[in-house]
Length: 291
Image (cartoon, rainbow, N blue to C red; front, side):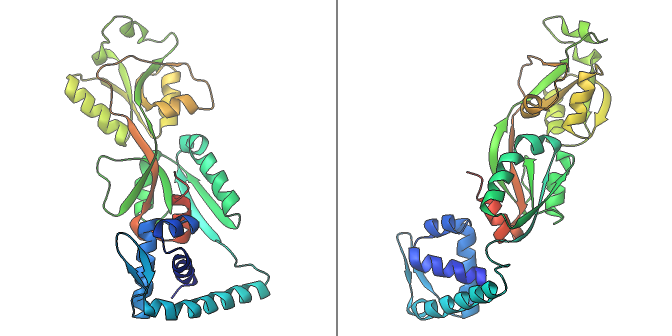
């Protein structure tokens, strides 16, 4: 039995409302429900009567409430005697994001999280956005910023933050392929193309080529949007990149957006975590920051 579960039980017994308790305790309603169910299994009795309209303490819940309050009070007293070192959320949360995510999406979230939970240590790891799902799925990281895949693996949970178009970009300078872009119709077969090694953008670009019947020359395959943007800016070829990366990149690059039809399907960007971690107090607290 965890102190955290007892605190959730006490709060819910006071509000008798899953929504208000989940908001106050920084946990999703579904995760709160699972925590209460586990507590009921441990106690061996139903603590609440709940239906679509209301939540009420059972007779067993009424008997258990003062005991729960006593246990939590003694726990808090013990922590206070030791200098309060265990009060509030504490520990470490491991977050993963690409370089783009670190300067465009994560700053606001991390700042808000630090202000709300100053005793939680944030361990941030950066790398290719293509590795985000794998790192969360393996348990190496707690949460990651990632593009929503076509099919979300059943062991992962995704929460949307924003949407960004995928755009075709070309060098905005004098380069060998410039003349191929001057006509009203782009000659894709002769353009050197830079592709991501593996990610959702590559899947959508390849689907676009199959749909349009184009067979471009692959100049290079790179790991990460930042490397792709740099190579296009240096005049190596054309590529596809999320508009969010282009607009938020901290260094001005000599690239331009091409007017291409049909447009590529946009990205949904959000945070992802493993289903077995969604009930973790730290992960749940970070999860609830996303409005």
